[in-house]
Length: 565
RNA sequence: GCGCGGGUAGUCUAGUGGUAGGACAACGGCCUUCCGAGCCGUUAGCCCGGGUUCGAAUCCCGGCCCGCGCACCA
Image (cartoon, rainbow, N blue to C red; front, side):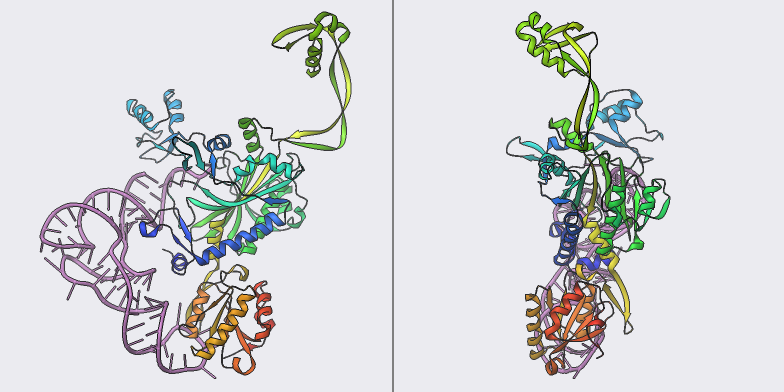
C-alpha cells in the first residue's frame, strides 16, 4: 500500500468496507476524517453549481425501474455476451462478431454463443482461440416488490432521475431556458475489476449538473468570468494547448462557449478545493471513447500516483436523453420557446369549401373539413380518413391559399451539457496533492497541507504540560471554540512535539497551546501547520482570529507577534 | 475475467514443519517550560475454509482481499 493510503487508513479517513468478513473490492467506508472532507467538498460544489448558477438541487431514488435504463440505453444489451481472445486479449460483443464472421443470428446467451464458437471453431482475427463467453453489463440488477417482482437496477449515474422528472422541472422554471438541475448522490457500477484504491469503486458518490439549454444557444451569460483563464487542454488528437478559454472557443478547440464555461468553472472549483493547477488538465474524449449519449466530452484529469485520473466529465449530451425518454414514455419532453418577436411565415393552407362539401357529404362534411385543415399542402386530389373511412376529394371541395401567419415560438427539445463530478476521486486527489513531507529540527515531518477550510478538524487545543491547571484551562478554551462552531479537538497525551506531529499528519491547520504565560496574561499561542510558527494572541480574541484564519489563507503573523519558545 | 507476485498486532516487519518475536503507534503512570525525548507498565496478530501431518504462520487445494500487467470502465 502506498504511504498516503497507509496514512489515510491508519488515521481514519477511509478504509475498505466489510473488513471483518474479508472485504469486498470496490467498496469503501468513509471514516470520521474522510467523511468530513467529502461533506465539505460537496458544500463547495453546491456553492459553485447550485447557488451560483441558474440551478436547483433535487434528490431521486437510487433504484430505477427497468424502463428508465432501456430508454437511456444503459440496459441495451444487458443480455449481451462478450468473448475474449486468449492470445491477443481482444474482447468482442459475441452476437455481433458471430453475425459478422459467420452470418449467423445467435441468441445472445453464454451457452448458445459457446455452442457456436465450438461448433464452427470460431477464431479471433489474430488466429487465437476464444475463452468461455461472459456477460458484460455493469449495472446491479434487483427486484422491486415480493414474488417475481419488477425488475429494477441500481442507477449507474444520478442524471437519469433528472431527465425522468424533466416536465416537472421545466415547469418549476416556468419553461424558461437555460436552467440547470443538480443531484448529489450515490451511483453504482458492477465493475469487473475494481482497482487502484478508491479510484474505481462499485458504489460511488457523484455530483452532477444537467444544464438544459436551447440547441441553438450553447452560451452562458457569465462566460466572461472565465474567458481569460488559461487552461491546459489536450484535444482528441492528443495535441496539448495552453490557451485562454476564449481562444479555445474561437479556434474551435472547444466546440462551444457553454462547454468552455463549464470547463472554466470546474477548474476554478477544483483549484479552490485544493487540486494543484500544475497537476490538472482537460482532455477531450477521442471519437471511439465517448459514451453512447455524448456528442462531445471533456474530462478534467488530475495527476496522481496512479497517473492521470479522470475526476470530472463534462459532456454535451445533446438531446439524446430527452429524445429517448420522449420516444419510450410517449410524453412530450419539449419546451415551447417563444421568439423575441413573432415572425410572419408564409405558407400554403388548405381551405375547405363547405358550400360544396355540405350537400355531398351531409353530416360528415364538418369532420372532413377539419381533416382538410390539418393538411400542410394538397395536390389536385387528396385523401382523408374520417371515422375509419377513406374519402377521396377532388379539387372543387377545397382551395389552396397562400396565407401569412404569425408564429410566436417553437417547440424544442433542449440540449443538455453535463458536468459530472466523481466526489470520491476528487476527495482522494485533494488528500494526495496535500500529502507532503518536510524537515523540522532535523527530523522528517509528515504534513497534510489541505486548504484550511476543507480540513476535517479546524483546531486542536493542547495543554503544554499534562498538569491539572493546564488541562483545565485548555478544556475551557475547547468549550469556548466549540460553542462558536469551530470543530475543535483536545489532546493532552504525550509530549507537545508528538501532539503537533499527530495533528500535522491529518491536516489540522492550527494548534492552540496553553503554556505558562497563559496564566500570567491570558494569552495562548496559535501554531500554523504549514510553517510550524507560532503567534501569541489574547484568549478573548481567539475565536475571531481563528475564524478569520480558517476562512482565508492569511498568515498567522498578521494576527500577533511571532512567539519563540 | 486472465496472468504474475503478495496477505503475521492499528502500522511496518522477523519467523521454510516443533512455545509467534521486534519496532513504531495507541493506552495508563512517572517525569516534563514548545516540535515524534526518557523510564515503568498495558492492550493487541498468523485473511477464510478444507487437506496432508503426531504437529501447519510455514506444505497442498479452493475462496476472499491487496499490488502489477492485459482486458473492461457505457
